[in-house]
Length: 400
Image 1 (cartoon, rainbow, N blue to C red):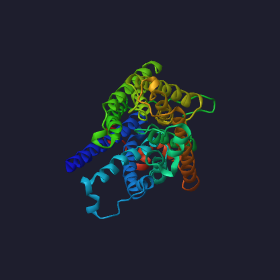
Image 2: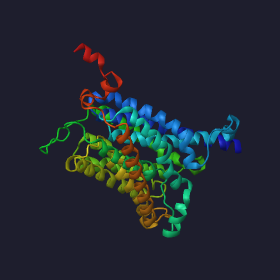
Image 3: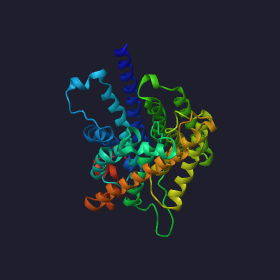
Image 4: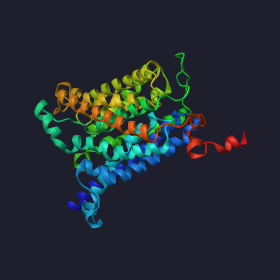
């Protein structure tokens, strides 16, 4: 029975890892559909190579930073318990690799390729796992301090703050340090529209992410005996709430509609194991509205050229999710309890502060040393031709 249980747990978390791995195709197609045609190849290459760099960095350094263990031992030891620790690493790696995938969308179309890979290695090797260890592995006694102060530990079941808010808030300094794309904002106060290159690809990316998210959330239980249908239904309700709210707030804009479910899913991650489904619906709806409102303000009023809106989508909706777990996870609002609003607020603030500091340090250092941005000529030609020497549709262009 023990062998069967170990095998079932290994298979369970392996399937979760595969589902979240598939989400990276969603990141790629969401970016591909949103950027201009001259940056589509770059979007696809970045996500795959960032994932590969993330794997090496997390395997050699990051997992040890977060969990105090390593894999530089014999294969016989690694294969114990059906290799459960290895597939657990695989599952958690897919979370870690989401950080550079999130950042990629914000800095699209004008970031240099190799400096971003350096940033990926540092972020996944240290910046992200440092906070991951605090939130999910009791590092430095922070959780014990929060429990003593507020009555409950900081609760983030599937990473609203640990993954999404951290990724989004790291991206914000990167976007600001890079500056807007050429001609996006004119000196006279006007703006040049850079519409999505492909709504179908944007929608495909959103759908892949949405489906994979059920592995992201449900499989965060990490063992078969802890699986919860409540997590699945709460994820569903938040997704629907985010979609409908973005539909209304975004006035039928397809870009908003397809990012709406992602906003809801980002927000529900933290408390998906605690909330009532009605609470999850409300959390998702608020997140969808928050994304549309703040994306519009970011682009039009503040003139921050966050191409995919990763700061409002992941940074702000992730922050809302961390706080929302302390509201809708309470028994007073139909949740299971065991959380405190003040504990969630403090834990979320800690994650946001660490992410901003990490983003400023990593991208500020790279800007001062090797540079972050393509030259004006390279940006004009597009990242595809400048970096990869081929466009997304070379045959069509040759025929024309």
